[in-house]
Length: 269
Picture 1 (cartoon, rainbow, N blue to C red):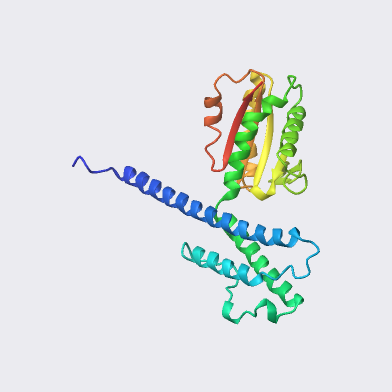
Picture 2 (picture 1 turned 30 degrees about the vertical axis):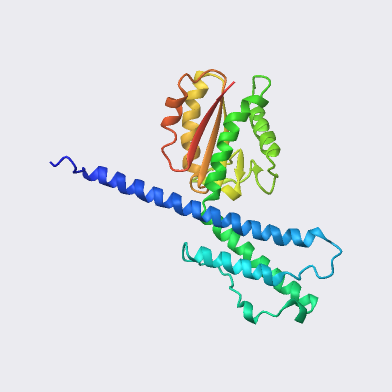
């Protein structure tokens, strides 16, 4: 065999790596476009709030149309744009001096609506839910121990601490997260995750390892939860709060994170 030749499995790995890098580059481009779209949208909202008493507050609609068109054309250079949005023929749009306030308001809000649709379209393709889920994982991993002032006796104490961290992070119950809802039925058994974050398609489950026997049982519980929640949620995060029963956290988590979208963190008391 020539020294430069690769085994088939090596070629596959290189191709997969290349595709992964291409996907990452595409996501980065989407995120940059998303930042621009969000900034333009916020600028429009700021213009309305800056002077509440202004009569002609929608006067700048043509300027925003022009900027919006530039952003759309830039995105079209990145990818095929399938979002149901408009492009404006600026030459045919009346000047502010030739319109009444109601028409200006209608045109202004049209641009804002198109930006909102474009923002949602880009968010889905930038894979922001995955990024936010990863940020949440690191946040809980770094912060949970700091808010556990005493050794917990029950799992609910850890759940309460997690909820306080979610609230402190600015998440709103019933909007960004819910607790003990999102029932999932598998065969004749029903399971309810401790927390769900619908916008991230994430189920968050808390476990308390008080004894070695319980730590071993948690492995079986997690495997069962993966089978149940994986049918409904793209991502599952398990937070295992350990009171000194798990000796090797890497070995504990390695076999549990084989399913795509599943992550397990062990927080030591």
